[in-house]
Image 1 (cartoon, rainbow, N blue to C red):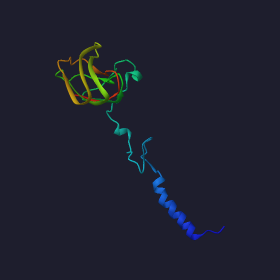
Image 2: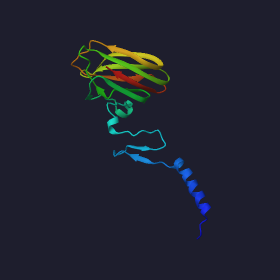
Image 3: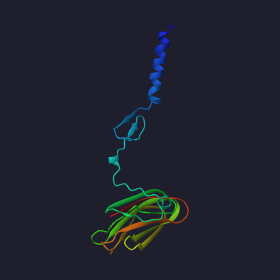
Image 4: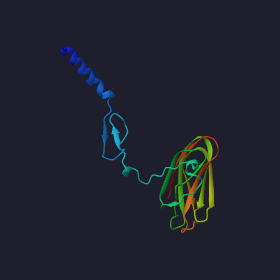
Length: 172
């Protein structure tokens, strides 16, 4: 079979022109599951990158149980889709002055009332409840005072019916 030199050069040029657009080269960092596809904006993520992240899931998948694990302040929790309510994944003690300050930022797919209920994990009773009706919240700040410094506390975050809620809550 005799090859036409011009045809071969044209095919080679065509393949080289097309290849960068359709090819996906993967780079691995040696960490299982951590890879980067060239030509995309996906960064390499390693286990070290995921520290102190607490993604909350709705009570439907977690169950209706309060948290059993402890953490310390500051504590940050977030969720990307709550349609009813969820608990924080951890319980924590207030600062030495008996105070917990909470900053809540988020948005809902429609206007709703968000309710933050602080529970005493030692007694299982609600200590205080705060409501805020809106469609978005930008650092809604709440401070809780005179809390027992020997007790652990946790939150129940709930919303009124309709739509979903995404939020980040920081406790200090």
